[in-house]
Length: 82
Image 1 (cartoon, helix red, strand yellow):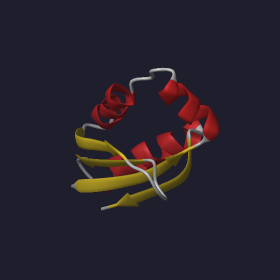
Image 2 (cartoon, helix red, strand yellow):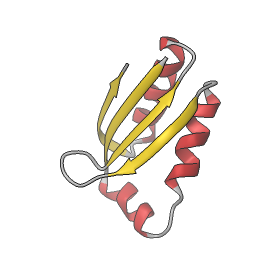
Image 3 (cartoon, helix red, strand yellow):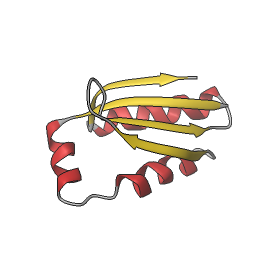
């Protein structure tokens, strides 16, 4: 199942990005942890800071990934399009 994720980083998470945190590796690992695959990652200006396209096995895997991101406290806005 294809998914597109739009997210806005919280200030503490944005600081990590500025200090050289490799978000691409971390986000790819998150997809892999639910049996999925990250296809692309784009940092953007505007309402959202990042757009991620990927694939997950099913809605349950997608929901698990969404809950993990929300629980991390790293994002203030998170939209998952299936």
